[in-house]
Length: 211
Image (cartoon, helix red, strand yellow):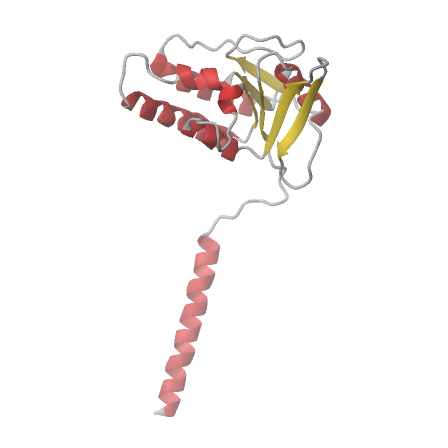
């Protein structure tokens, strides 16, 4: 009986080991040696140099950006994409197509979305006046974010005070989500003497200067 029990135990151990091995073979792991794509938020009040900061941020890191300039700001050396925002239901799809074009491009590797707060407003359907509008907005933004992650492109969000999240500030859930999604955050501001400054408020690994 003891020999039989020992044989059974051995078989159970072998079966468990085989199960663990099969599970490990089935799991897919991320390549830790692959370069992590940039997910950055540059934010601040109007007129504090956020767009210029985004451009300099890319120059410092050797990124090759294009921009969806929702707020129609002023970029000197970054190409501005022509995206159709006229039809509510097509906006997310149009942006997803842009992201996929960047992913297939050898010329560009980074998407700047300048005016992410304005983009969120554009994703809110104007024909719906109740809470469903905000649910649709959240779903549409989620489609854009999933496409960004799948396409593996660098993303830089540029936002104004509606992206500032503090305990005192009644920010939107999507603003909080964007703040949580990014690895890097830079707060841009202007001193009383008119000097443009910035501060890194969130970072991954080693803290870095904006530019």
